[in-house]
Length: 282
Length: 294
Image 1: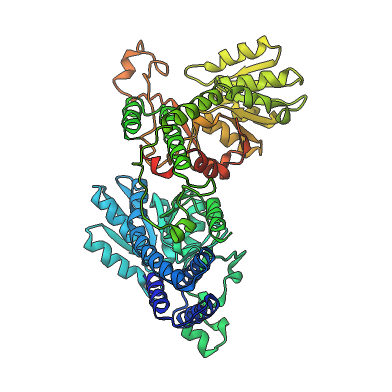
Image 2: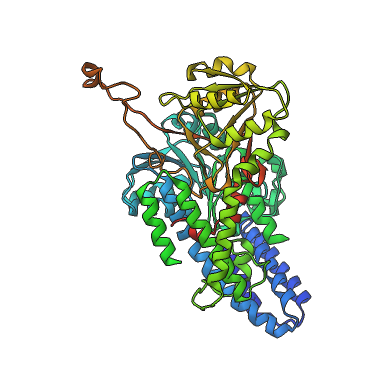
């Protein structure tokens, strides 16, 4: 995913850095993260970068000798990358028991984590069918449907507007997340909030799957609070157009609409998310 | 640890609905891990749980329990004895908190028979005067026994059928119930009829208080909803003497009910009162994540 690639890039940057001080290193890393966000302003890149920076600060506190510190950092960075690549499998293992035989699942847009979970469910011999929203404006749902058909799962692509109509037929809703915020809510492709509201109205469980590096230090109280640099693509922001004419790419779903979050740290209720974030940043 | 785990698996396989067996096995495993960690020289601060922090700072990927320590066995046995003493005192601990929650001239509703709730109400009755309405909880009608025991302590008790729960709820101040198991998301597995009671309480905005000791907290999630259920002979629902109809209908007699966490106001346990959203925290203190699957 893009966040993993960003972290790998930062690690490579770290290896090549010629500075002699921690302060210098932090500054140059911050510049690197800024550059990355200017190219691809997704939430995951930002949270991954922030996590990496935090990881540098934590390590620097333990060792005072700079060169030794750098060695340890590089070693831990490699371990971190390895753990992160295993996280998708961990999540799939946690989540697939929640998919019962004969279930009808609704999902939104294209998410590799959700794909992995459904793959794991197929491997454990469960039969289920999937409804995918088309997810305009980039038709990401069609991509998801194609990938699911390859796994021999019966798929139906529905209009984004048909979510309310289809909700009564569905047993559970499973979406990925681009970012998980401190309140336990999620930032995901535009349309997720609608699905969550419909699911709540019809009493259907709304499950979110996300890796732990997507946890972000944001606390939006409403849709307006989500920073513009996440809502719109980086090039749109650069051209400086009037943003009221632009369509945002993501929205915020509040924690009261989410039933459970599946992460590589375990199955969490939305209230447990802030606890995890505190454990890291305190 | 493997020995305990295999024994635990055997015991839980024998009766899956008795989750306390599995819970205790997990507690013992956690105790062993802690004692080992203490002897291994790790500081008290270091967290054994998965966390973002650990993701960044830990050196290796797994932990090795192979180093033998002679005093480990004695330490573990001592810790288990402490746990036994704690277990024996749970009902009293819960009952001690009764006075804070029950006030004079209140109408309390409960369902079925729970020893914890009985002790809770008896303790409060020593200093306060209140009324109790007991739903009889068909088909086993354990509510009758509860009512008899409460009235022996001179508590004004009324028994009514489960169908009347909603009708009477508007006059009730609090609902206090016991439970069989508490699940990891804060939900309950309690006697059949509790979900109805919880929904009625929610509708009238009556607080629902659950009195349960911590050993009933189980790290399972309600995923396979059919797997935790226990059905008993439908003799109570429709006796075998009604032979003619029996061939034409299906009769079920489920013992347990699932109550979702949104309907519960407070959990009172031997370690104090907690909100359902806090259950995950209590769970991380009692059990280690690797032991969730025995």
